[in-house]
Image 1 (tube, rainbow, N blue to C red):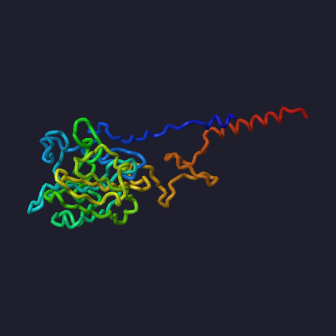
Image 2 (tube, rainbow, N blue to C red):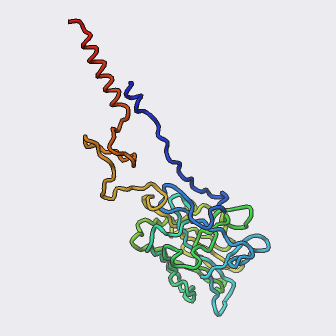
Length: 302
């Protein structure tokens, strides 16, 4: 009991960073990646452009929608009607927060688009290459998910990479193919599904993972007069081992940096360990017990 008492104790653990939750004030982090634990890639936080910013585009008078400038937005020539739309890809980490693919470099996401969009320079097909900041001037250009009291749509932070178009006839059918994910890190990207909304302003008050449907339930829409808009988001999620950045790391790279004692055991919990006894204080107790035993033997009557 004395020996156990000499070595028992609770070492103080390092405090772990806390994940940023939806709706939380994240302006202090922007624009950068937040500190998170247990994810393959930390959340990328970039506020939406405010009015007066060059990338702020317009807001509806009735507060039903808001839009931001997207370099992949194009108008059909000749302009055939009021049909407009948006096709996006959003990549989420294991916590469900938007990321830009730093942990899956060389991954390419391809969405085939129908002949209706052949005229669009960024369609036929729609290709997204990760990591986004290395390949695009505007890596994230839309706020497709979340809510805030200050905006008609979105939570105030960009989360998607999109293709936009205008000028299709109001009886046109827009089709897009099933997403293909390719590259050496493709196995770390899971296709969650598709969030498609046609004929109305985009409702961002949905969880992208919970709202995602199979391709068979999406795949396109047909415009009609008075309902000449539509959007769809391909929802992807990292499915890695959580050790690329900010997560639990595994240093077992074939080398052994831990110290060894004379009995062949190892202790890697203390980087300053110099081979001392793993149970400090136990040796002194053992010596004391031995001395008391010797004195007890010598004091026994012959």
